[in-house]
Image 1 (tube, one colour):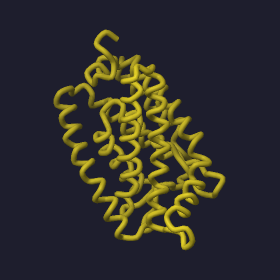
Image 2 (cartoon, rainbow, N blue to C red; image 1 turned 180 degrees about the horizontal axis):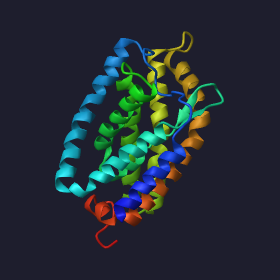
Image 3 (tube, rainbow, N blue to C red; image 1 turned 45 degrees about the horizontal axis):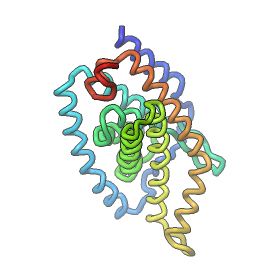
Image 4 (cartoon, helix red, strand yellow; image 1 turned 60 degrees about the horizontal axis):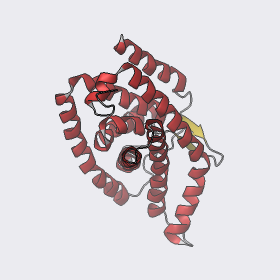
Length: 246
């Protein structure tokens, strides 16, 4: 019964959020100079390696969490595929990395995020293979690290669970776009003003639409978390998200 309800939630999210149009916000194929593609890809590799070991350890110790792991990946795929055109002519989207990060940690989400981005590149033409490292670093590395740190800080401060989940998802989403802006500013500094001027320009493009989207992601992640907490308490206790007394 629990498994049925979880799959129904996943199906509802898919049907409700899967986009009809495929605008790509991820840095597209061939857009970055080769040196930056190599640099961001190299920086991403250690997190991916650590993530494989983290997932292997979790699954070996708690095999029943496999379905939650798959759901975390599906949640990120669906939300990050939802493209919303911005007022600037570009487009923005949710990332969905906060949910999986809260459950399995930032390095595990790095692996799931890389798989999500690879699927989007191949199946939806979002992003690109040459820019996979850069996109993975912003969405699958920085986003989860921010989400994880936010969640832990609020929990350590005895803050309410709902606030920890909401802010972890929202800030992870927002800092993903900040990182993308930094990546683009480094690759394409302005002729006048250099990196800073370029960063202000890219931040101006993304920030207008991303703040409300980050809030939306926080709300959706909280709804997802509450649904999982209602139907999969045992799995969340295995992962130490809920206390044994819950």
